[in-house]
Amino acid sequence: MADIDVDFDKVGLLAVRDGKILLCRKKHTTSLLILPGGCREPGESAIDCLSRELREELGDVVVTAVELVGVYTDRAAGPETAQPKTVRIELYRAELIGEPVARSEIAELVWFGERDDCFQLAPSIANKILPDLLARGILPWA
Image (cartoon, rainbow, N blue to C red; front, side, top):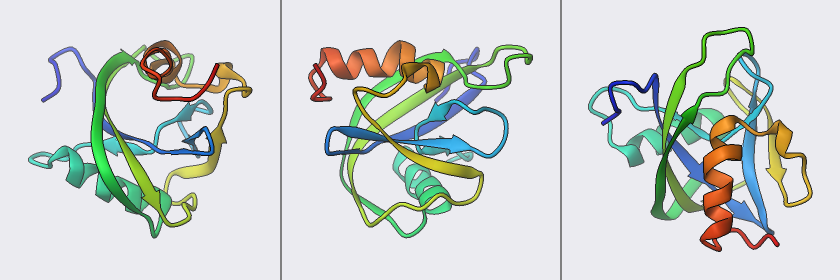
């Protein structure tokens, strides 16, 4: 369940290939990179939400070996001129089977690596998720 002060309750995917994280750039609302996934529908489990969102956003892909990484709360990505919103992301690591393709509201998929520009990242990724993944050794970056 989302906290009362959370505007968006999301489930996200951490997919890592060749040391890079799969991220998305939406067609609208923000140019920052976000995690694949999305908001839970009423009564929907985290895994059902993740599966539905991945079909919508990434096409004919399946996830296996799904495991909870953590739950993160921070400022949501959005227009700079808008009132700040808060997002809660329940993040799951999984193996992605199939080749993801940008669909629905997703304009572009990016395999983000250690040398890429962190200023492209949504606040939740830059401020909370990436530092935690590095501190725990989940990402093989220096």
